[in-house]
Image 1 (cartoon, helix red, strand yellow):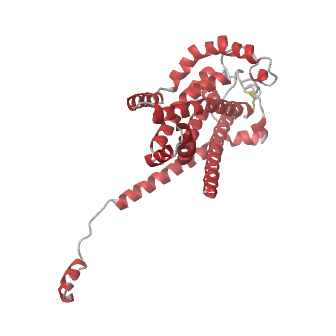
Image 2 (image 1 turned 120 degrees about the vertical axis):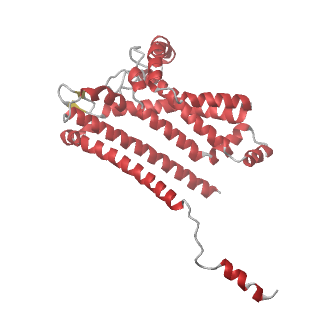
Image 3 (image 1 turned 30 degrees about the vertical axis):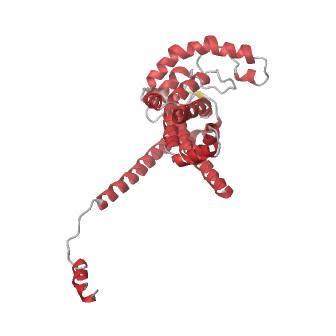
Length: 329
């Protein structure tokens, strides 16, 4: 082919001065950047407000504010140990109840259930996450509290009251309100969210991985434990952390059933309190500029710190798991 015949074509294609097509990339880039920076600014503003508002309490009580169990508005002596203990204990108990149930539900929906039943039940589980927390609190107060007081705690004492360590965990009068009741309510509330995340993660795994494992003779449980869980570890941990974040920050439902007692004890049936419920109960009665209001603001800062520590620990666990998987491979 003659080279001279290609010159006009190339010059026409590369001819400068042609109008450029306008795209939305610069606008989209600026919009996404503004959204990210805006979230950071809002989060930073919340942290600053909590920390600055709680500085009078930290200055008045010092490090003892974190370990003091006293919360007495009459003597103006406040401590964060009791609500922090209630927050952590109720959230951990809720996760111990909710995570196995969520995993079993997600496993059944993605592996064992018929397609029609899986879609209907999966939608019903997701709709539970839209129920207002006040409804769960009212249901827990009128239904769950009498059940725990008249049946669950007496049965636990009759079965395990002679066991040395377990007897301490189930001791106390059967009030019905306490950490266990709050944990059950929280577990019911966070289970739909965790189940939805696990179900989506389990369903998104490439089918070739499952079929390869089944072709090698693996059972359903072996496929879940050796293939699905390692592949979806990050999503599973993210769902659990999301559920724990909601459990630690839940207010009204916990306030109905936890008993409103600033006390630290070993019994899971004893009345207690959480940071969120204590703030909800005491905030309307706290005058502006008072030491009580500063203590509540300090509790809010502590709750945010606990959430950040939980998220950091989950990221560390994920990083360690990825490193160990890479070394084995």
